[in-house]
Image (cartoon, rainbow, N blue to C red; front, side):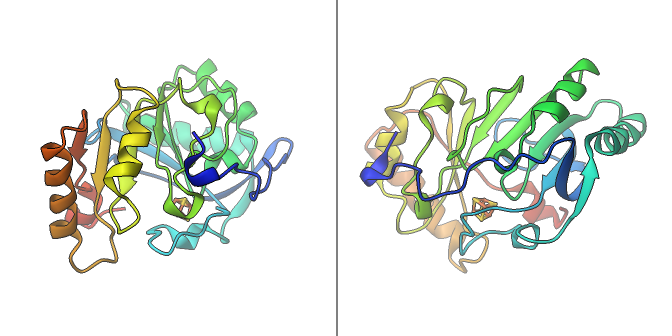
Length: 223
Ligand code: SF4
């Protein structure tokens, strides 16, 4: 989908790092967003995101992190899995698809992990991922790479003045069978009111599958 003519070409290509990745942090917590909210999760937060949105609540991941071998990453994930056996793995960032994930994903799938990814939607890699969460951004004109369209399990959108009914209708036009969550902008003092207002407008004009997406991690003050 190329909203307002955006082609995705302003942004860099996937960084090939061989068997290493730039990782900001790996930690265990609860998934706080979307349909899989409440699931115990091992988060792998990659370093780097080209978009640098003003409302980003993970901005410390844009630049800081360490290089880790894929083997080390998998070992770290397995340590958490021993402590919390029911956990899924959530690949997030930053923007995870700015790095080549193929080796890590393949090793984790060999070990039967349920893999979830959270991406801003401007890149695509053909990966054996179980759950695709796409969060298109106004700064990229809400572009979602065409190859992602058939993969999407859910969409999350931050509510601000750029997220209009027209934009939501165009996201809805991709497919009608995934939910679109409206999420408050963490830095907006009127975030809940603004989100509720847009939600109500969506219901009045009957955009199918629009849901409220209140983030557990901010309410519980956990990461
Ligand atoms: S796309 Fe996501 S991770 Fe990247 S800057 Fe925007 S909010 Fe942050």
